Amino acid sequence: MQVLNELRLNDNRMLLKDHIVRSPILPKTSHELERDVVVQGECVVEGAVFARNLEVQQGPLRVKGCVYTQLELHVNTDATGTVVFEKAVGSSNAVVALAPRARTHFLADVSAKQVKLSNAYVAANIFADEIVLDNCVVIGGVFATRNLELSDCVVGTFNSPVVRSSKTVYLLFPSAFSVEKISYLPGSELFSLTLADLGALMRGVPEAENTGKIRMNIEQDEVKTVLSADGIQQILRSYSVVGKVLATGLVDYDRLQNQFLISCASMGNQLLRTYDLGVGSDGKPVELTAERIADFFFDILLGKISVSTISGDFDLASIVNGLTPTLATPTVPSAGAEVSEPTEPVPSPLVEVAETIEPPPPIAPVALDVELAEQEKPGTEEGPEVPLGGEPVQRETQVQPDEATKVFCRHCGAEVEDCAAFCGNCGKSL
Image: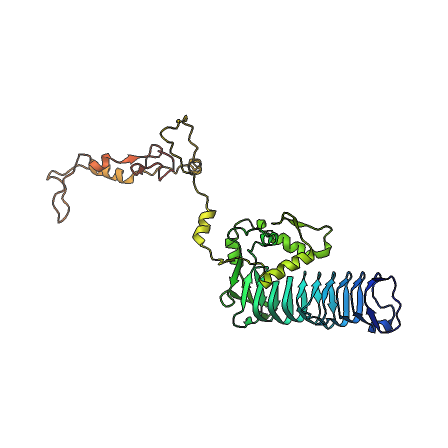
């Protein structure tokens, strides 16, 4: 390819084919603000690009600097090859890449009024008024201020007033948002890959147990929230599996390597080195390059890599039992086992707390004093006292059997139940 160290063109249309451009394509005079850049073949631009229109007729193309267009960045539908934009891409009007045979890679944010992509990979976020994605992978978020259309896509999350969905949509993060209810065609599916073992799938090894994609029900998983500020209210609908993720994700989430994979994908060329996930099934390290990550997610989208499905349902009782510490149960030694010397019993925390509490002052036996006073009263000569309308009451001098079997605390003297280990009044052991 021909190397261009400096560009000196007098017309308003720059044609690039089989060129390596060392310098940035930036206007130096007001006349060059209206210049169009057309890529007709294999090219590499090492600097930034500013143009009224940037048209890619044929690939491959790699732009290592930022790109900004006044009107449109357009990739022709009949273009072939790979088109890579390593840094941020912006446009005052539109970014359009609908070539089915040319895969477009955006390794940083994309911002424009209108974004229409097909067969594209975006390692960061998309910001626009209107967004249309077909057969695309977006690692970050898709944020539209007006409407969003998704068809056969893998996205991190999305947020838009109006969302239209068709075919299959995968979410890398637990939640997505919209203002109006999502409108979807019959047969459309929405999955969450939050609990999928992406690291194992990329390495080509079996997935971990209890991992996989979660099918989301658009009608049932919708949560409506009313936001109010300065007297203005807005309804926000969230579609989330965060409750299922928190409940079923009590296992070690780091072992899935999902966060590491997504972080390396979103950082792109900002990383100073190339990381890997470990050794794959072929015995070679799986390096996390932009092209390899894009191929991996497109294989999931096209069904070449099958992700197992989990229901995401959980039993609250099992979670409570799993989180509640259980007391150790003593083991019964076998007949032939040697009996070890008895050790001092470990005091229970309840006993220690009970011993630190001072016992309340003893209660005076008022009822007993009354009975003694009545016994000390002198009887009348006529005989024993007889209550009105009743028969004479015979005083029993013998001790009842029940009173003989009563047990009293040796610390405070209160009555306790038979075979009790602790006193209910002072809390000390008997």
